[in-house]
Amino acid sequence: MASFSAFNLSTKMVASLEKLGYKEPSPVQTNIIPKALKGESLICQSETGSGKTHSYLIPIFEKVDPNLPRTQSIIICPSRELARQVFDFAKELCKFFPKHKVRLFTSDTQKSDNTDGLSVAPHIVIGTPGRLKDVLIDEYPLDLHNLRSLILDEADMLLDLGYFDSIDAIYGALNNDPQVMVFSATLNESLKEKLRRYISSEFLYESEVNMTAKGVKHHYVDIKHVGINEALMNFLKIKQPYLAIVFASKKETVNQVYAYLKQQKVSCIAFTGDLEQRERRKSIRLIKENRYQVVVASDLLSRGIDIEDVSDVISLDLPSDIDYYYHRAGRTGRFGKEGDSWIFYNSDTAEKAKQLLDSGIEFDFLTLKRDGLVSDPVGLLPKKKFSKKKAFGEEEAKEIKIVKANTRTNKVKPAYKKKRQWEIEKVKNKYKRKAIQKAIRKKKDEHYAQMAKLKGGE
Ligand code: AMP
Image (cartoon, rainbow, N blue to C red):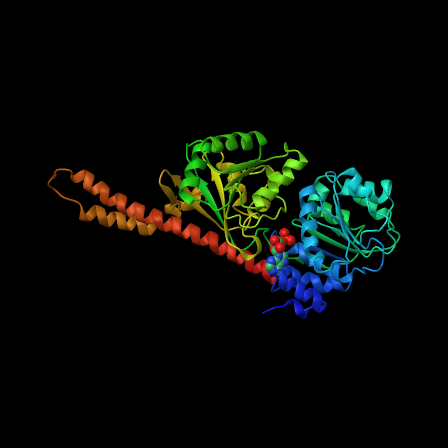
């Protein structure tokens, strides 16, 4: 079994992690911690729930010199919630390293908080780009000499939200070349281009091909003609999830579904960008305390937020940027746990839902009935692939001929035509089933071949 003691970590750190219940490092941590400890810059493309935050927090904590009254690490996150989450993890570590000073700067930390107590420089600073820029450069020029590491967490989101101007300003204010560690769920060309200024090193760790954890099972659910509210209510009754996050791309849908569930006396909460910062924080705290069974949310909640115990993620629709599906699904199956991600669709939304079929994720297909979920072997798989003529044409034609011959009669018995047709239908159905099974097998084989290829290329 891998162990934290195999790394070049202090016994105090290993003991602290043990106390926090972190017995063995995750694959991301195994790959990142040794490099980070050596001070190397790196890019890590990691799935959500993989333990990536600790893969940088642990080395940072190890390397901070608590006797040096200077800011030694800056961690930049794209949202207040994410920054606070990282801050909370850091505070946990501070219990074992009380001399390490960590500060959080986001637009919802009080202005007075920002400069209070800064006569003693925090060793580690965590925050959102705009606020950090104000504090570090404009309002209170902290001494950034000796900055050892700069961390960009969820870098793809930092870029999407246009935060690189502030980050560039912070980076430009440094007078040395710190270690830069970048963590991102996706890594496209424009992000790589942007990062060139920050990272010359070639090291790139890719933890997973698709970005959701291995323990997550993905399902398509055909809700047929039933409305979204009724379908969801029925689904909740059938599955009785422990804690479900229900995602919808529009906040109007979120509010409407939330109102309906509330009326139906479901223990639920809504989470959208409409909430004030204070309310958002309170909501996240209550959700983490397992006060609700259902959270109805916009995609604001789909990125990075770590809520343990989410058993089910339900997508009432798919996000316009399909990558967000991975983020949604990544809210469950956190850290080796198991979870289910369900996509609701019907004939009107099937086309959009098909976008994910080639993503390399394995799905199963279900139909939501009043009293349960039943398997639908065809689902969204391309129907033309089931053309029985193509797959089993000759065999089937031969068998039908035999049936016809066996049911031929000179005397016209009652219902003879019906019986004959019935026998022929049976043969046709048998081949239809065979064709479907063959297509599903083929799809699976293709998927495994693709995964093997990608693994081989790592
Ligand atoms: P992250 O991928 O950083 O969002 O982390 C996901 C969750 O994994 C957090 O709740 C951490 O507390 C937890 N975690 C991180 N490292 C470990 C570990 N080595 N063993 C167990 N849990 C961990």
